[in-house]
Length: 447
Image 1 (cartoon, helix red, strand yellow):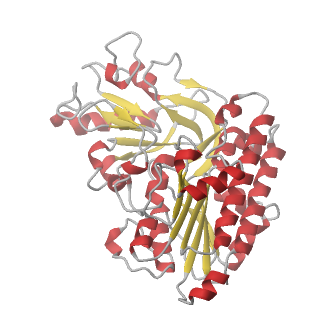
Image 2 (tube, one colour):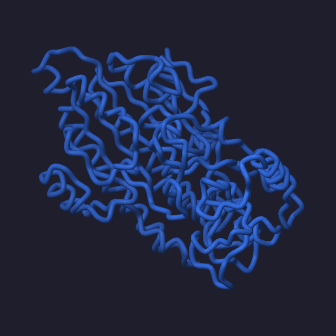
Image 3 (cartoon, rainbow, N blue to C red):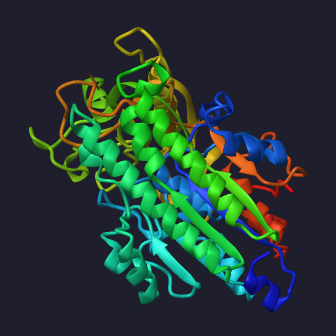
């Protein structure tokens, strides 16, 4: 138990959540000898595979994980969303998340929250103890609150994110070096503020794991050139998890979780090109540059990852599908997606989820009509410049998956079976003994 805890003497339980973005459960559970600190949490507490959300994209996953609510409530469906009633798009940021975060509820209960490097939290909130925004932040100077946090992190050469452009090089040595430097500084920051021992909820995310997976995961799964480098990086992450666990006072429950799983990538699938070739999508110009260039002949268009919108009359500016034909058109598109095969003859799509099955809430007016969940190996892309090919390969060799998401809770009483991302926020609040209404969340406490 920490010094501050002894001085205040309030006895309130606390939680430290450590996010490991994109880390698949199978990687950790099938290699316990390589990752003993994750194995120790599983042995002393509870661990298992959970489900991500639809769609399993980080910009949508972290708002759902930190609110316990689906994108229909958070208002964030992916890295790119569209404005209501237009073809205009925007990149959702922290202020676009329309549901209360778990740390908001902690602060409202008179407790304190330290929040570090969570994706989709820029600009940093000033109603929490301290916050450093994560992915999508322009830089540390504007991402840290209060100023003394920024000043300290600058001494660590702390960076918001690894430089992903380095992963595009054939020689991955510089990328790997940058990933190590990024995760080293992140660990030092986490350890420093954990040892401050002045918080009730510590919430920090290692996102570099996701970056490493995007460029090295196939090397790990299929014995590629950089397999040893991949394992070495993850052994460092495992060591850091163990050292953070050791630094925690006795009144703190540790949770470690990812936001989605990962698998090897064989083909990127450019769905707007597929829609164009199949007669679903047409453009007003020969060289379209944005969504607004689609023509009135269009029946459907796509956003990443695997989100499909019917070009509906009265909803889209140049909608061509009458409402009376919506169900028929959507059913046909769903059938076409389910029948699509890749160059190797394998089915591209594992399943297609209809809007009403995945999204509900006050902000479902921009929800996609269909979401395709891909089979392993197919990464679903879009783009509005008609691509020359439907199936391509690129510098990335790893992709997100809906399944194989990780959850570790340092509590043997936790029950993880059939859990998903929506269960994490109510679990944290239960562990903190903060009251909430069970109807507030799409998930339920696991303790």
